[in-house]
Image 1 (cartoon, chains in turn orange, cyan, green, blue):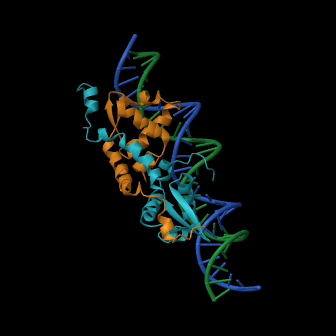
Image 2: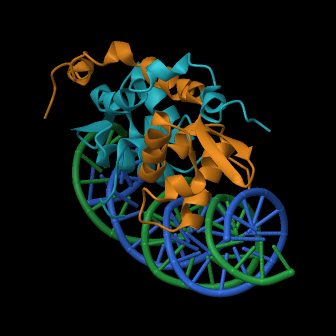
Length: 106
Length: 106
DNA sequence: TGTTTTGCTAACCGGATGGTTACATATAAT
DNA sequence: ATTATATGTAACCATCCGGTTAGCAAAACA
């Protein structure tokens, strides 16, 4: 699994990974602790965690043989920044095109 | 290309599609107008636009043989909502685990 | 010491993704 | 009527993705 092209947007694209983030928001969990909450196998969760760590969204702290996963929420700011740049457009009507086409709508 | 599992998070996972959204924020463009701004082929852009329309992020208004693309920014709220639920965690120090492990850190 | 537990990695699989080229269709322009 | 333009679609391809099972290594426990 290469470490290329790993960014936050791609990491949160998967619903399972978003769920994992939700879980870890409450408290740090070991990998098995995370896996208990899902139907899929441990290796599958392990892969998800790896993707989340590769982009910095999750940080792992080793404690003996256990590895506690926690979210670095600051990484989510990258997503927040991207989204909020469009906040001003949100309440805008969807009729900008109408103007653009000078009411020539089909 | 099935219409299944098409959600906003997956749509914005691709950097090209995020760029497209940035482009369309300024003004509605035809499909060729969008494609002019990228190196990839027109069919590739066509596929991206299809994905963006399937999840509702982009709306198309046909004008003769031209198809004007514009962003429905309200769809981005879904992303914003997901992110902002974690706003309270942002300024939090990354030492919650330290407490959890009772200073037993390696 | 031996065994259980935690977690990683490898090999594999089917389906999705992102790209291409080639061709089809419909509207517009000459 | 013919040609040019705008766009869609099909077929194909390499790679990625998310999942599996099997096996390995290290720490913890009996």
